[in-house]
Amino acid sequence: MLYKRSSELFQEAQKVIPGGVNSPVRAFNSVGGTPIFVQSAKGAYLYDEDGNVLIDYINSWGPMLLGHAFEPVVQAVIEKAKKGTSFGMPTQIETQIAELAVSMVPNIDKIRFVNSGTEACMSAIRLARGFTNRDKIIKFKGCYHGHSDSFLIEAGSGAVTFGSPNSPGVTQGTAKDTLLAEYNNLDSVITLLEANPNKVAAIIVEPVAGNMGCVIPKKGFLQGLRDLCTAHGTLLIFDEVMTGFRLAKGGAQELFGINADLVTFGKVIGGGLPVGAFAGRSEIMDYLAPIGPVYQAGTLSGNPLAMAAGLTMLEHINADDSLYERLEQKTSYLAKGIAKVLDKHSIEYSINQLGSMMSVFFSKEKVYDFKTASLGDTPFFKAFFHGLLEHGVYIAPSSYETWFITDALTYQDLDKTIEIVDIVCTKLNKA
Image 1 (cartoon, helix red, strand yellow):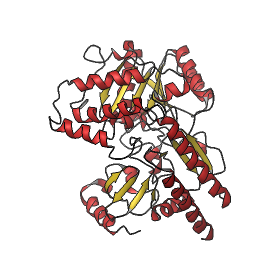
Image 2 (cartoon, helix red, strand yellow):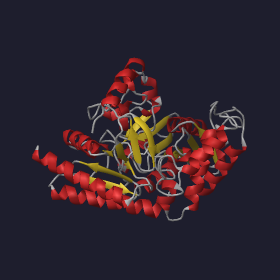
Image 3 (cartoon, rainbow, N blue to C red):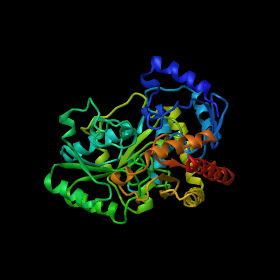
Image 4 (tube, rainbow, N blue to C red):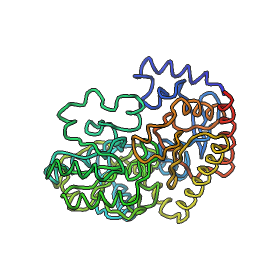
């Protein structure tokens, strides 16, 4: 495939945008080459500026659960836009989507909408600190909760890819209040809690990690966190920016039967528009201004376009009782097909898959935390990425990212993808 136009556009962008992109992973730094500039998307496919058609396994990093340009969402946004794009005042649709979200997700009474997953996690941490009157938080190495200062300590995702998990600009004062534990290791959490008695406001965790690749919690890990938080008077925050409404109607809380104190959302809840949210029990959420002392605000929070997209998306998800079964079957089919090809070519790998999230790690070690996720063959991944791209399959340009499967994918798309993986691996084995 040719990418002449994308290359030209990237050169133009670098003159006026830092690095030529508005989010670092898009720059292809970890895989090399020129980022692809998209012209449009529909269903399971991307159409780039050079006229290429790509099968998409990023899906805007998760929100396109039902496919790109899902017609009901598009029409809802168009109709709402005709009435005005933003008012900075309350609208009825905010209450409607709040009521629907609360009805779908276990253990939440109230929800506040913001503009991104980063903003949701940042606000949840502030609320937890205000509610508990404690300063410290525990996060897990390799988990990414957005680019707020408190979270850029051993972060996953793009922070790892760029080799700067401790970003310049994050003060020592902020960093000292973020304690680091090992994902899937309860002993590391116990050690931190015991070393900081009555000082930890919250433990924040991706219940299924998606920013060091897809990493699944071991049996008992999430329940162990719940028990530790209850025992120490610490709030448990589930960062469900990726998993919320993707793994189940009620997210990871429903899937695993674990109640968190606060939950953050993004991606799917926005239906493709910039939306985030955080939610919890009334006694915690009522600590927020204007009725509580913890301040949080946003002029565009709950804007009508985003609310229209999100409400329509959630309504379709809620009405489709077989959606998650279909997504699981398609993702499992793809994972098994790729595994069969990699076995055929004697390539060392480990595949993690849960629901419609999956990752292929080029290492024989089973991946269960940040350390094991880092053992993959990076040069091979780069070649694998570009091989797929050359044949019309687009996966995340980083080995630390999850593949997101959309219901718009057909089994013909999946078979074609598996066939392309076979072609690429044959070529790489001969190189």
